[in-house]
Image (tube, rainbow, N blue to C red; front, side, top):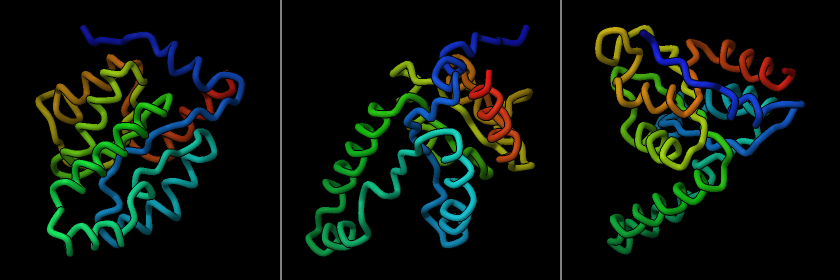
Length: 170
């Protein structure tokens, strides 16, 4: 029997047109095409319904360059992870980009952390490829964390935005 936990927490966060702080977990900042889609389409679409917390803006490229020049990549990497963890704690929910042959490990970790904090998690998987165990859209533990948090996985950005809009007007 499929698990269908209550989405009451998610509905409550978005009720009455609210736009809660939402951490945006994604690997889209790692490549030129991803950065363009992220900035021009993804973030603006989500910003209609949530207040995006953009981890790609928490650390500047010059900080990475300085850390590399000083030979402190590992310690700076931990600092970046701490910044992202604080941003997740400051958010009321999390939306995760789950596309790819395998879901990005950092994105999966951010979902697990947010779910452990009791934040509803929403996934977007528009990728046509299977990435999880039979019957699962992604790794079974990742999908379980999303569903058990009261969230869902949408198949397109349009579906995700429509579901957020419906929750905001409910």
